[in-house]
Length: 153
Image (tube, rainbow, N blue to C red; front, side, top):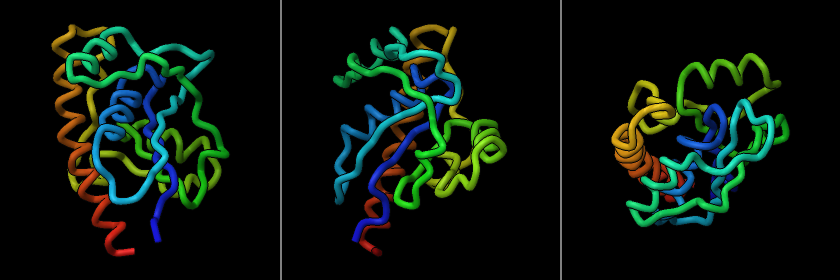
């Protein structure tokens, strides 16, 4: 029996790191079907993925061109949802502002690492590419973690 039905990556505006993580994970092989999406903490209206994010995704044969940013909601905190943040500050903000935020973790800590995933917004295309490759390494560890959890359930 699988542990989670949905995984939500949380970033600030849901236009860069969260969607990038979503695209990377969707390209990987998971033992069990898992709904994968991203959401933001500050989303005033739906926006597409940042153009530099989309350029880096396309350079790596991925895309999220139909993505529209969405806000993280209280209803996202279900016992069968895994919520992963990009920074410790985001995790702390969620713990402060949401009631009983179950299955909430910092992405890097969830895979046994530490530290925040640096936000490339406002930086060069190389900064976005660096973020992509850092995220890809972390997502690879996440895939191993999720697949091992499925084997143990």
